[in-house]
Length: 50
Image 1: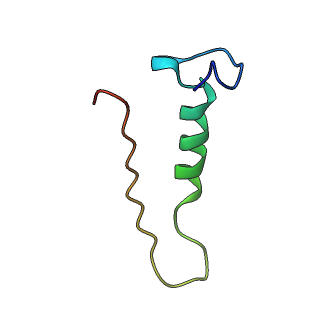
Image 2 (image 1 turned 90 degrees about the vertical axis):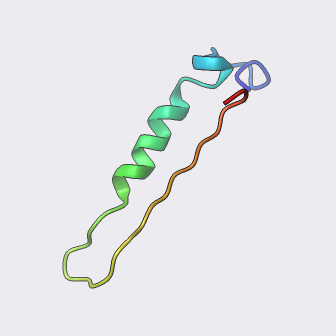
């Protein structure tokens, strides 16, 4: 993936920032003050050969 985008590869050839981007998305899920309800997040990430 990184080579196709002409970027420096990280783990298993994926861009190094991919894991940081996922963490940022996960951090945004949560409670909102003054609002009722809930958020359920079920992240699924599969890598080749896993």
